[in-house]
Length: 389
Ligand code: KIV
Ligand code: ZN
Image 1 (cartoon, rainbow, N blue to C red):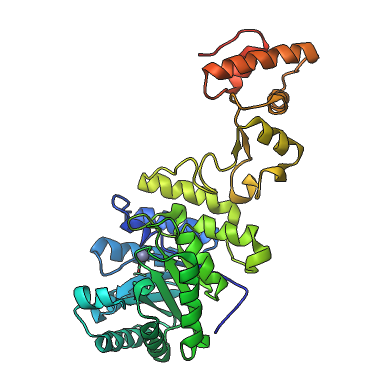
Image 2: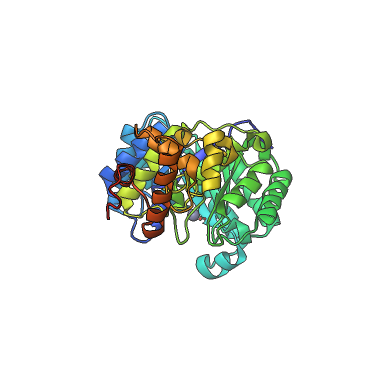
């Protein structure tokens, strides 16, 4: 099996992410996202599905024309016309990849494709050979691999590697797998596929059970070296593995994962904001890494701890992912230490112990009435003019 110390980050915000109902993106919006993803340092960005529409074809082409540092990719079913459209849209790219796929699970082959397994292998091989006529970098995905027969996956992967696929993707298309199960599937298939060392194995996990990131990490521990993910976890149905969570898990738990990515983590929050503003999908406040509360501390015990040593309650620094700083939210759970620290930041002299004690009592009384206490409230409170409500 091919193992490296690098984890390839394949972003599919503009393809699978765009498949979220209501998240469609115009050509110009994709260009803006593409440039942001390039700054972020993604290795591969899937810019769309060129055959899907004239608009998407043009969007893939426009992204391919402006992005130079990251590989630009288009999705294509295992059909000649899809692959031709992908190749044409990717023509201007400095680095390009065609990503072709076909379903491999019994339920998809029988009811959706109405094909026998032998025909599926034959079509997959033909698609990879066709894609290789246009570019050296070809990825093959076994759609619904999570519910496919592992022996059949080994068979089809061996055949497409021989046909020239350099990346083999194992999607949990319906987000059905559990982490230990998915990790074991990936490890087993990598170990039993002939010539697996000629390809990078990849995973693409959906979040229907909220396990997309956990499943991806389990697969990485078994040797997968590419993760497909999206900004803010956008994607079909409940979404895909979230890029920011994968990347920060790699970084914060390098002791266990021992892999690097090329991501400039300080660009994570700007990328999240851009995708949210373009799609109109708000980021939930408690979303890991990019939610407004991800680095906010309100409980007095936590605030006191963070003021004494930030690692008491923070496993990463807000600035490392692009926030300006952690946020101490003053509210009824806050303690004296955070109250005093905020007064000092505002240049307000807390006064002697008595004055400070009185101000703190007034602050607590106000916090019982008012959910968040703003800086203006503090100024008013210390100067004796109680509430700003
Ligand atoms: O979820 C999936 O299986 C996909 C493939 C096209 C990779 O999005
Ligand atoms: Zn998907």
